[in-house]
Length: 70
Image (tube, rainbow, N blue to C red; front, side, top):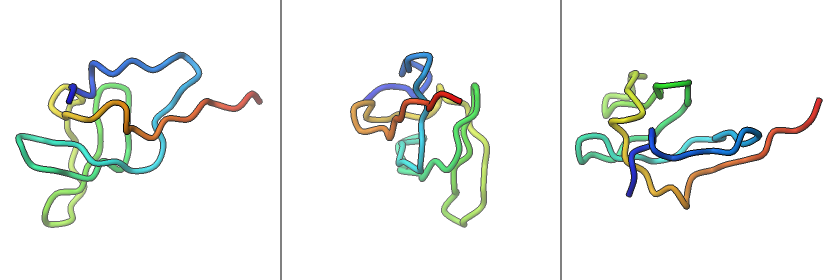
């Protein structure tokens, strides 16, 4: 597992869909990825903001897609 902040994407790649990550040893569902932060759902179902450096992911399982031209 690696910190999400350490996962490098090519210039034309973006993270898509939702994916699971660990936050302080607890699995959370990431619903949006911003420049330095992510939105995740708490146990209570609330949307919360977290730094990418605090999320741990399996980089080879992330949903990545290349941006289309135009």
